[in-house]
Image (cartoon, rainbow, N blue to C red; front, side, top):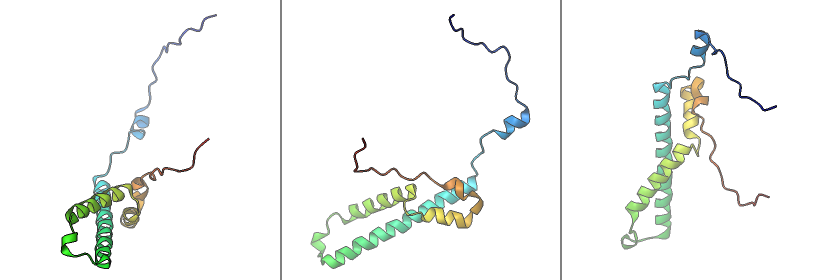
Length: 123
């Protein structure tokens, strides 16, 4: 006997209280602003750390002024790396700040951990 598709004869009517309960929550603009500010702080912190490490390595290598070509490009690259690391939450500084400032909303700011490539072969 062939299977016939089932046709619904009535539509489901959900009570208004149920449809109100399952509506997606609107993002709180205060939480979004706090997250952005925390990420910018983390980016600035990481950028400053990278800048200080590069400056220290220049002092230790005893470079003279003629050997410092591309210094501005390296500073720009450091800033871009810092922004990307802060967006990923790599150091966790932004998350810690948000936990202190907005403890009730800290779980909303957790981003998934970045995927790390493995050198092991999978069977």
